[in-house]
Length: 204
Image 1: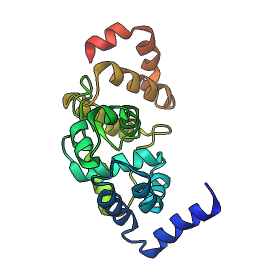
Image 2 (image 1 turned 90 degrees about the vertical axis):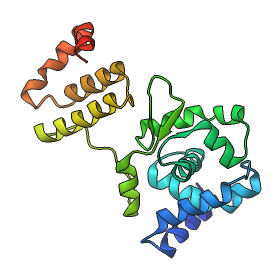
Image 3 (image 1 turned 30 degrees about the vertical axis):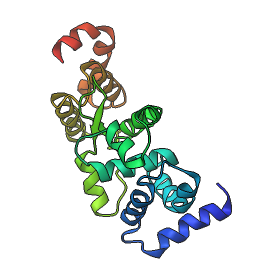
Image 4 (image 1 turned 90 degrees about the horizontal axis):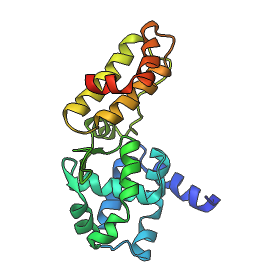
């Protein structure tokens, strides 16, 4: 990013640090509505989009989509909602499916049904953080103690019960989590998970 563009984002943030993130999202929502993502609209919200993208560590297009999801949701948003807000065809919006996948991976969105992947929502922790003008950060996954590890497992099993994650993806997450926390004595079972996946899938 050029010095001028970065300075613009910094200037915007400094204008009202206590509500900068919420104000940036609000501005993007207003400018992007019925914009068809035309060049003039992108220019009008450029500083805000860059600011959001930098804060969340996502791309600028993902930042716009995230803002729209916040406005159209935060509960039960689908591709029709995105198309309606941006005044784009459904086919055009489907080209952004990989961006939605990236937002889900960043835990800023969550598929309501991981098998279908046709609608999604904004998780409560993301909304809670935004209320305090804070960026949601994924829980750390290494160097955990037993309590932290089980809190994370509980969250994932809640996602499974809500169909927000598939059993196969959950198995991969748990396997990697245990392998990354070998200092906890019982995580030696991670070796079993990799060697006997069919048994683990039956348990899940």
